[in-house]
Image (cartoon, rainbow, N blue to C red; front, side, top):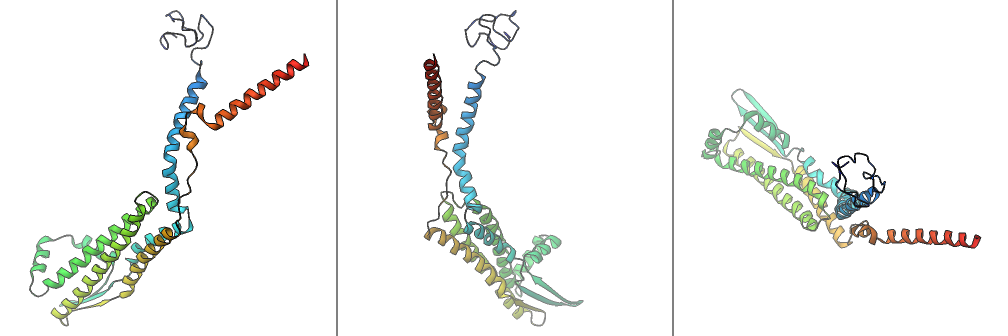
Length: 279
């Protein structure tokens, strides 16, 4: 026992190597378990204190996700712009010596194009530098880059919706949809200019169509997000925080602890009084 403790925690008896039993040879108290309830209470006190510090973050996270019906609707519309990118922006048709090829332009077809063809910098440089189709390819590059930016913004904005109730959550909730509308507008404008430019430069070889419904769907989803956030602000819908102020106090200073202590003391006094009266 001397290897575990040098002195008895109760009587302060100095333990020696021959004192190998769990009980103190001086007062007989079990050295291992003496004061264990107090130690457990201290550890629980620390755990409850840290939980109380984290609880407001949990409350804000819960409110941002499912704390209000509008929170759930906001999450749905936060994901819909990404789904709308799967809708066709239009179609392109080009005639080659070995046949006519048509393709639907959307997020999947763009990804498949780059995956299958890779990023040939020499070819890109030649296409951009071409006097015939260079301008159209620049518009195409602007459309693709804007579409990718919109995808990234939509994904980041969707995940940041979980922090909607954080100190800067409202500013982010307005900023991401607005930037998303700008990006998708630039993407569709670049695509339309590309179709017009290449159709004029390559008559009978290249033709393209534009599907405005895809653009309208994405803009409506972003607009719905803005409207929902405006409703949150106008109605002043706030987080319902769990009251954990008691756990920020030391255990002995908590109102519940004081009440339990008074109740125990009152119970002991009553029992003592009844015993005296019986005698």
